[in-house]
Amino acid sequence: MKKVLFATTALIATASVAAADVRLSGYGRFGLDYNDANDSNINGVSDTTITSRLRLQFDMSAETDMGVAFDARFRAQAESRDNNPGGAVFNGARFGVVWEGLRVNVGNIIGAVENMPGTYLETRTAGIGIDGAGFFSHVGNVNNEFFNWDAYSSAGVGVNGVEALYTYEGFVGHISYSDRNETIAANNNGGFDRAAIMLTYSWNDFGVAAAYQNSGAMWEDKTLVSGWYDGGNWGARIAYADNDGISKWGLYGNIDIGAASNLVLFVTSEDSVDQADVNAGRGDNRVASTSASCAAGTTCTDTEGETYGINWSYDLGGGASFETGYRRASNDNDTFQAGVYFSF
Image (cartoon, rainbow, N blue to C red; front, top):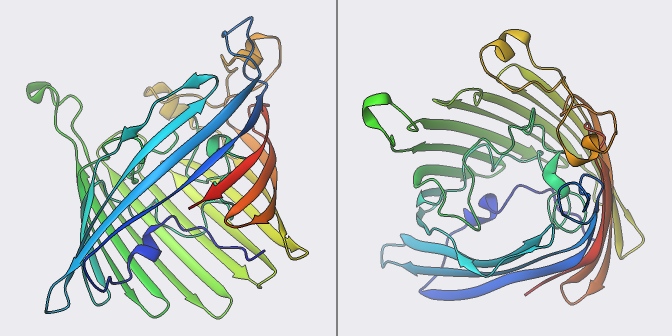
């Protein structure tokens, strides 16, 4: 089973398009999710539920006589988690213009931090199991401040930002910017901007990447670095992030087992939050959690400490695979998932 170093969809999207075209693609996934943070007697949710998603993606493109390409993308997605079924919704559109190695996007942008290689798992969900299991493996997710960077939204409208990506041989550069409206202009309430940059370079079987985000919102400044080796049938990488004062390390490895299966393992370690930040209003990852598992009597903390997980994938052929994974989070939350993923 050929493994892929996951770098979202953006690096693939930098390629030019050849002519006017409308393409449909997508995937479906469904399976069982065991999550010991759920308890029907406490939060009303069973610890074992069905998790599922169906995504239909629309890609449109056209190319001028001068070789400048224009494209757009949007998605329809229906999802169910924690026994909370949802109907299909359309997300915000992303528009792009491509000329040679340069791409400029506006609207529901990818985001420079999101596009950094070496931060997601080499699995079909980019996380553990059938739906990612919370993505505790990402070094940018700390202190319950998860996904506080610009990223392409599959089920929402996105950030209505602008970004530029440049690709030359093994080098990729990416800058992005977004600005949110102030909900109460006189009080400067709700409005803030984010600016980010990402650089990556790959050669032979090796690669390195770095990203930085500056945000007008509290606790969102980030610096991330990663490095990896891809040996064909196996690979390893390391990643680190300074999340506005909270450091987090990650070690990752994956190996093909025979011709049809792949095993991915990871461990991360998150440092504690600074007391001065807590005094200023930041959440405290050192204190007892209020999750259902802790309320039931389990001693745990929010996110400080080590998280580890394992994922096994078996290729069924025809774009389908069986996915299963286990994750123990630093808050002592256990999840186990198993199901089927198929693309079309």
